[in-house]
Image 1 (cartoon, rainbow, N blue to C red):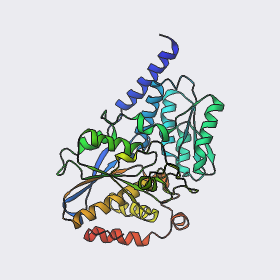
Image 2: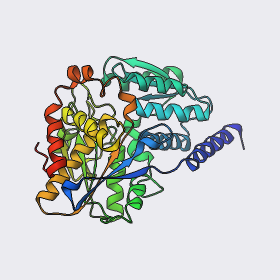
Image 3: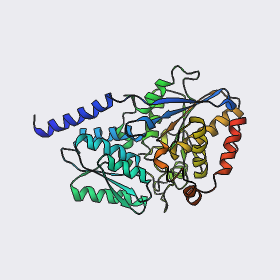
Image 4: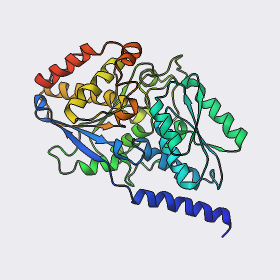
Length: 356
């Protein structure tokens, strides 16, 4: 066996060994007496070694690239990312002894930049989120490296039929609950890879669960879902880091989505502050988008007299956003007044009605 083959074998062994050392993430049942008969769960992806949902994706992308022969010993890894994917990929690059460069917007939270650098990665900043793709390709060509391209390969790098992917884990953890087959799974798209995995898994397992995808402000996914126009673009990017895109990403598969909803950024940020009082800890802004959509559905189910379960995701910890989503001045200047949404959420907690 030649040295190149031996290196790939050893790289895959290291990733699989790391996986064996990692426990599954928790499924948290949220106590909401006002919607009795509708049970709401949060799949807490913040407990991964790199602190976010993207740890699963980064592992899959590295295995996919290695098995395709795209990554070899000393291959520089380049990724376009708003932060969390880059943090996780920097972790795996360090595990394999590979150089890593993250191409990220200048607006990325400083805590995320520090975490990328903590794992040995280097950050290459661009002015606007729409520039990350071309700049990543340029760097990969210039350095004879590999552009991981999460936005293209996220939907195909993960085995959606099982193999302990997020959907398999979620549904296995629900088996002993009062309503084991969720009426809805609610999540937000960044690459679109996770919604593709969950939606395909639901169909493959012949489940009746509906997949609801929630989209923030300044994102094209909802309009694309409604129109089918792949050419849609926006001049400004999402303020909810990690989700929402200014263009239609190749990994977003609308055919596996049962419905989509728009969640205002003010509602997303208000929801994470409301949730902090229930959980006793901070979560990232995309979790607010997810949870607000799940609360809408729970309220509507109660109004229709329906019972069942709703599952959504905690994507990452709020500790990464102390200088943004948990800073009053940043919220006032970048998001707006969240007080009306906080009042709506407090009313929901008391009577189960979410007035939007």
